[in-house]
Length: 84
Image 1 (cartoon, one colour):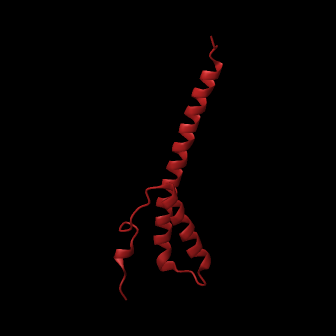
Image 2: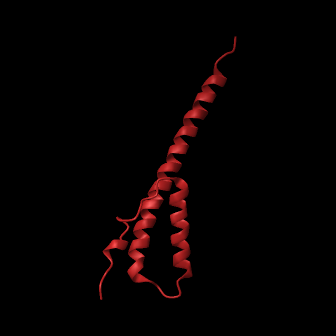
Image 3: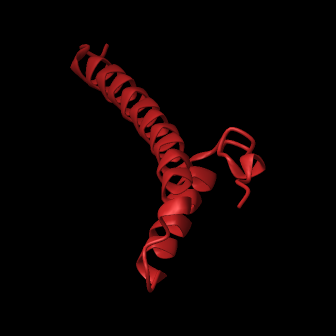
């Protein structure tokens, strides 16, 4: 009985974009839903991959929220200035 160390998430390419990370989350969720019996050997890998993908998604969403807030604040400042 040998274990495959090459299948660890550290060796897998980490997602860089929101779309890639979201795709990882969707694929892992589908893999879990479609299992007839729990694959405990692969569960840790799926969880680790999903946590990395979740962090990428979270960071991207937070970046967009900050950019939108800054843009809206700037637009409000421009609107509140008296026009000549």
